[in-house]
Image (cartoon, rainbow, N blue to C red):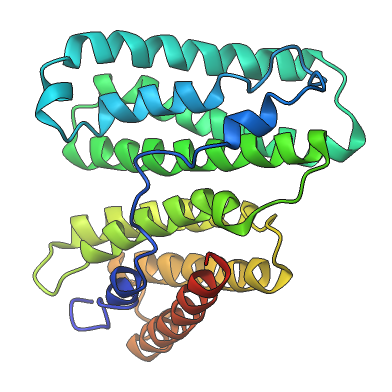
Length: 274
């Protein structure tokens, strides 16, 4: 397993700068959701961006200033999570217009994953599980930012900006890059297995992100996600010793496909995000 193409697509993401600038959500997404027209679910998502950034400030603190405020940041993050839980509860009880049903449903799924990871993190004792939860918190906060923005655009009948919308899929792609980097030639089988389990979950999330303004980009990420799911499942079988079912040549071909597909995603993302 260590001999296969564990580099897959990680270098491409760094070169394309898809993972840059994700710790703060794009300005204006909350503004769209807070338009003059009242949202169908009472006050739903109007605080999403502030809540998301509070959660990110706590979990992804990078400055000396925020490191001195970990206790207060923890309180703010917990309050933010309760806000999101309240928003989901309201969504389920309110009547949602047909045009908004798909994005509201996606918001609920993304929020559920975020909530679960947030609640599980402090009680996890295994480092791999903690790392997995941190990854989920990272990309699901990105997804909620995108969901909030799209919902606001639908409600206010505003065009969806690819650059702002893509914060969600970019967040997932960045998390996938981190997990792919764990598949080094010297990594133990347990680490590679954990990485592939995370990659499979991330790819499944990426499939649901195909709701952007570019049909071509949506198609690319769905194809890539399906390939990643196949690759991760085959890799896990290979690690489990089921070499009769999965051959090294198959894994090598999937790795090559992932690299090619991701290169196409990076190129189109850079073009559309200008």
